[in-house]
Image 1 (cartoon, one colour):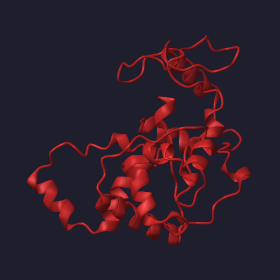
Image 2 (cartoon, one colour; image 1 turned 120 degrees about the horizontal axis):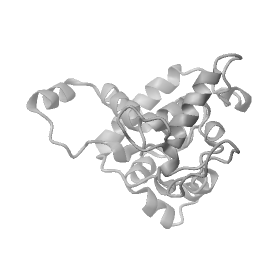
Image 3 (cartoon, rainbow, N blue to C red; image 1 turned 180 degrees about the vertical axis):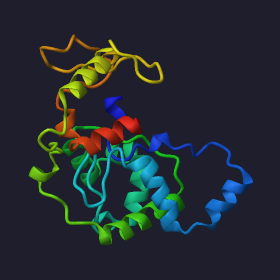
Image 4 (cartoon, one colour; image 1 turned 60 degrees about the vertical axis):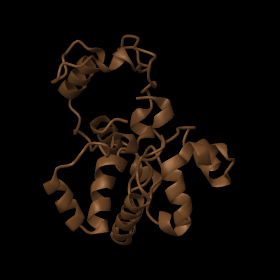
Length: 212
């Protein structure tokens, strides 16, 4: 997972350039903007964002349409690196606040971004109150994690057990500072504080399930 492409939605995953069948196009056309926005958000944005559940890799997006001008949001989603390079105060503050991680420029149209914003507005109006930082640690309930899970996780991380699809162990690219873990790779980010940094299990599951 490249440090340079993790901030905000992992929108680079979008298969937007893939040709759709006539049936799929017709079905999507029949959808309202909120439904279209929900599909895009759930597929592409959840690795880095929540709506009313606190920060993940990027900021919580509840109320973003009230905090930011629509034109600014569209430009940032489409050309975030240009906005940062222009010296924009808000963009650069977010860049620093979220560990200097940059969202790649996204091939989303203004209408597609608008659909995501429509979904965020609707979901945000009914979202629960944002939990306090102490509630967002993702700490499991006592007894939830077993010794066997820990052993299995260590084996998968270090590559002594094969992943289901035959991919290399996590430490081919990542490292963790722990005496029981053999020194890992340096191609990607150190994962020592990943659980806390990503907001606990939900964030970890999201980024592993939908990597940038």
